[in-house]
Image: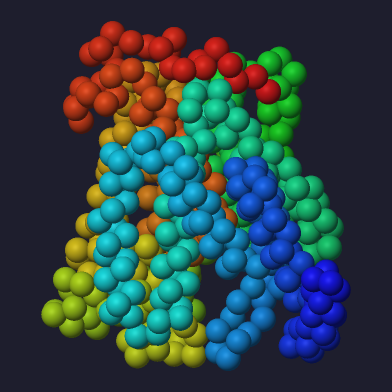
Length: 464
């Protein structure tokens, strides 16, 4: 009888649900997808989060079609997945409270507190809440990685998971190129919402590829080595086609510094770089920086000069009393039409994480944000003492993120941030598992305790 009542209820609701969703396939699929996610959450939430990470790289092109409006609020499966990730992190903590990594979690505490203050001070609570939950989901991914990585082999699995997540975007990139590459203004974005997101994601995957090839903590098989060596040039070509200069610079610096520190012979490959100037799109993107640097009537600024003008306008407009705590989350977009003379019709972000967070959370919020990365970098330095190559590459991932944050809205790129914090969280967990890590001071390293690679749990694993 209960089953009959349930069936009749569902049958009655479906037409109303279809009317409210406009009978669009993407929106209609939202409810079944939500139910499936709920079942997986109950059945095995650990596998669910791994599946989310494996396929989230192709999610943007699908999830955007599931969005629907309730009043002025836009909702979709993407936001619910973010919520599920936060719930899963909480479930992991509640399942094993004694394993809670208090020292690592405290890295985030000041910044999360200041974001909460920024949420209270915000002018538009809906947009501010979305921003807040997006950044909190990064914290959740960081915590999930710490609970997942319990040995060196677990960390190697995390690296492989991110590498495997790039396969479908790489395949779809071929389709994107075939359908849209018609001129020099083409920018590859594959399955991502913007070419810049793809570019920064590729820089991460390329560094992980180098980790697989060069880190003694990753024992790659001969077949796996060949596969990665063949795959990395494909990723580099995609990165080139995104036409994202800051990502080019970040990737270039990582590989050059690696060559200078560990393998000088690799510097010979730099002789091939001038050949890229013969690629029209590359040449145009680089030459664009040499013109349009001055503001004049009817003059078009290049992208960097435009950014500088935006930053100067924002900082110059700020009231002194707001310098401490800022204007609240998403306050930059709310006020940009007031202080930016170039274009008052678009709700711009700052294209600079540090300027945006200073504007929205003041000096206190910016310092808390920098404190987070200072603590992460300090932890990853300990990995460099365990193994210099592995530590260098993990440090490079974070440092290149800090570099590109000077010219882009990195906190908005949710997909990329998830993969980055999953790897960074796993690397921090690896350091935390090292003998002596609980008694080590900030300046004392693994070398002081006379321990090395063999002391890491599961160090002799990690084959592709």
